[in-house]
Length: 211
Image: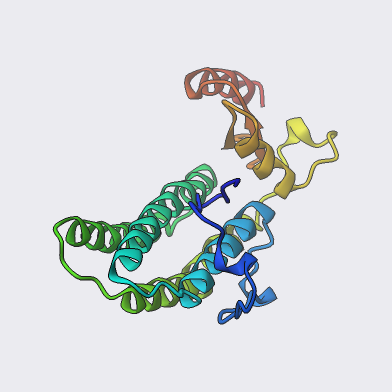
């Protein structure tokens, strides 16, 4: 059985019969960047999977919660890194506050994982409600701020003839190995490159000197 992006170890409940979509995706949650929206939709499917949990025995609940912690950590690693790379590349002024919110969420998950490893009994519904409430509030309140900031940027002058959109630039930066998202110091437009930061600085210093 193939794994989802969040690494399901067994068939997720959303692929099974009698599955209820407790938390529905809404256009109001959309960041208008497919990469981010896909990650947000994935975590909402995960939350719905938790809400559809049907494990009955303590042994099954233990194994399931172990899987839940692993998938949550994977989400943190992938999604937070994606958002923070975009924020840093576009010099988002609210980066520190956003990073602080990410860190607070991470610490709560780490504490839950540690308590679980120490043998403490954790209530899955409590963790599920925490995850659902945090994700929805974070998208609605904090993520929308950096997306508004992101929308201010156009394509870099060096890529204006490619026909790419800003979303294409972001996707390419994350999908192509070794690439990253950058902000042009000349035109303040977005571009992606596989060059090192040091090489890019040298190149752009040369370009800037000629403007």
